[in-house]
Image (tube, rainbow over all chains, first blue to last red; front, side, top):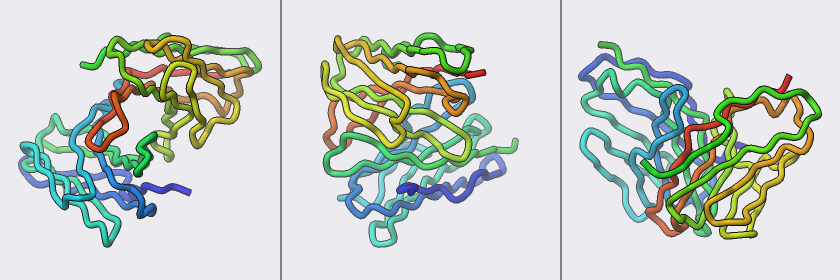
Length: 112
Length: 114
């Protein structure tokens, strides 16, 4: 069973607008969440993270929101830029922290 | 960029042959991981290591073995390759498993089993 789910395989947004990528998880023991960005033929690169003691973390144009009661996190990109076009993976880990569980990814296209 | 090198970057092999993929790091990180990426499945953990000679299975470990004889090298072996193991394989490293510790990924190895 997929413990981390990204239900939108793709998303298209106009340049300058907000991109919102969503992620749901099932394991209430998860306490650390990350977003990775992946370009074709490259490895995933770390974007932003959040621990379960917070409900928001911001880094420049990127903000991650965590709703623990709903087991839901989202990544907001404002304003979106064409260079943001990539596949975005959310990931989660639990108290032992030995491994990350990844979602299936959302392909973001930012239209100039 | 984290110092992670995967080799080879591309490989085509025949069904039934053994294949070894190598991950080399220069960061002296304790934790190393092998993931595979497949359409519709995202990244799935195959095996990971938490120290020299210390390894454990991930969610898709069947058909794979790993070895870590040195901190810097983590090898993934397909004992007898099958077409279902055609995938893109990523190695990742992580300094610690405390909160606020991300993993860094290599460039990937595209493996095709024919």
